[in-house]
Image (cartoon, rainbow, N blue to C red; front, top):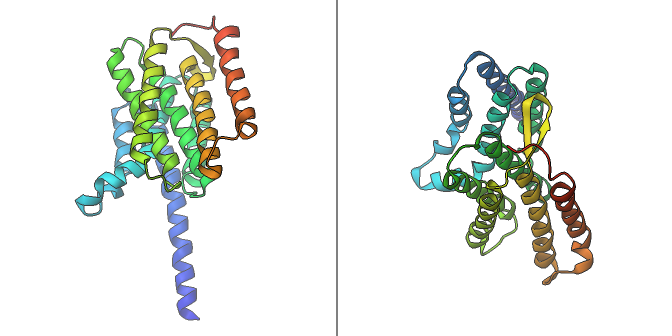
Length: 255
């Protein structure tokens, strides 16, 4: 009985320490952004928080890097948004609180529903962060970064599906995301958000198409074929979103 009490006490201490450290990371990123005029220290802090990736034998490094790519993308994207929102402390605090929610309530979950949510958040934030800062960048850099985000999100989603072609499918959808990013790079339209943030049209279109692809894949995986009645609603939703942002709000501010 004493052993059980000791184990429970250690578990509570570990859980409390986990919560404190994650909140401290989010607050530290906000403080660094407010104090330092360059984003590199904040980027370094995000990467430093992933030290456990390399705290194993080197043969496991690649697998650990793949497993932590989405979390790293979310962290780096947050830094981009925090710097973009400079001058709007309220927006920066809200972003920091949302990051705490990610760290404590979304990232630790391992069910298929949460894995899909994590992939969607990583894809959205990664593409939005790229479009936030990439105006004037060479298109090749934008395409490469978009491919990394698309590949990472797809692999993260497929990681719990026992997919035998996970590498091919991840590379393929990463290529689709990169191609769409290249096409829309030459037609960069964005929508103003609070705190000088901007959501690009390309991000909305790619995420909507990814939703359709996810539903089609899940239907095929479960039933051996794509059932139209299962994907009809996601297809209508995705097409409607794309139609609205392209044809109705297509005249928004050019990035």
